[in-house]
Amino acid sequence: MDGFEIAVFEGDGIGPEVMRPTVELLTALARGHGRYALNFETLPAGAGHYREHGVSLPGDALARARRADAILLSAMGLPEVRYPDGTEISPQIELRMELGLYAGVRPVFQFGQSCPIARFGGDQRPVDFVIVRESTEGLFYSHGKGEVIDDSEARETLRITRATSEKLFDFAFDLARQRKADGRGAGVVHCVDKANVFQAFAFFRRIFRERAEAFPDIRAEAAYVDATAMWLVEKPQVFDVLVTENMFGDILSDLGAAMMGGLGLAPSADIGERNAVFQPCHGSAPDIAGQGRANPIAMVLSAAMMLDWLGRTRGQEAMRADALRIHEAVREVVTSGGPLTPDLGGTASTGEVVAAVRDAA
Ligand code: ATP
Ligand code: MG
Image 1 (cartoon, protein in one colour):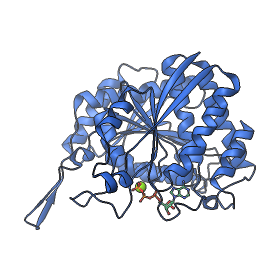
Image 2 (cartoon, helix red, strand yellow; image 1 turned 45 degrees about the vertical axis):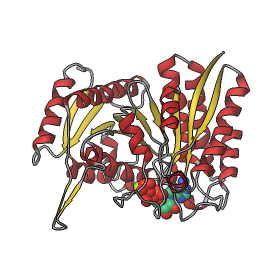
Image 3 (cartoon, rainbow, N blue to C red; image 1 turned 180 degrees about the vertical axis):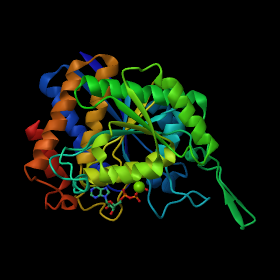
Image 4 (tube, rainbow, N blue to C red; image 1 turned 90 degrees about the horizontal axis):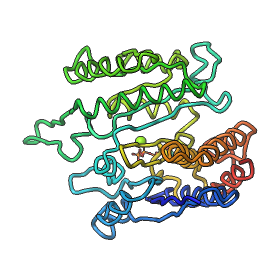
């Protein structure tokens, strides 16, 4: 039986609350059929760790995460704990940079009619698209390098490289191909940019056009980010795969999360050439931490994305099957009315929701 090493960052705030039952769920599923094994190793990082030890991502934890088959992360950062430059503790950004996780994958889909926005356009078809957010450069390249000059001006740098953009676009086109084969997408990739105003985005779009030629079976479209924001509200059904720069992807992902029914539902993956991190889109939610009412679904769906990615890249059909089981179990719980946590109008605890998913899987 194949075994996989999973590095786990429980992080801060609601992080441990959503992570622990998710790890139990994965363990129970794998044990149930015995076709693969998952070995979890919990590693220290985050704002709490920084407060106590003065380091947010210990070198040893990074090295261990790098060696693992996949990395599961919940949420890191606390508003009152900051680096000396005043920015929030964000080892998840360091991980993306260190491990070269250039493709941030943010699926947006609806369980039933949970999304009111989709109906603005009068189109009743469910929303189902994926945002691929470049995650190592763009405006975030400037992270930790910004400058405030004489307290009269501040500057940040936006960086687009050919090497990363080519990998990013190939990833997006491949994803569109996969979704088309799975019957989930129409085989369209939209490059989302601001090529009408910035050289860097015109460059980005030019590389997109170049790479599109290698994927004649996929339709390549380009769109400005402002218009895309409008279409995401008016006619989200036209989208299949959207590929975009880091900052734009950050913003559009939160819009996407709202379309799903809230941050508590939205999963994500950050994928590189060898490593991948799977984490919910939400943050550490300090306002509800310690109350046992955090919605675990985004974490659980992120774990399902991890199983699917491991299944695809390591040829493990059983893992892909389990990913689908989790996904469908969540759908059943959400559409049958619960149990749900308070953010979705219910009264259930984090543990009760995961238990229901486990029963339905
Ligand atoms: P970050 O900067 O890390 O993205 P944030 O400041 O955007 O964090 P979050 O921590 O994501 O904020 O929280 C935003 C709001 O959503 C808060 O009111 C929080 O309670 C709520 N929220 C986030 N995640 C969940 C969850 N899993 N379950 C219920 N509510 C959540
Ligand atoms: Mg946020």
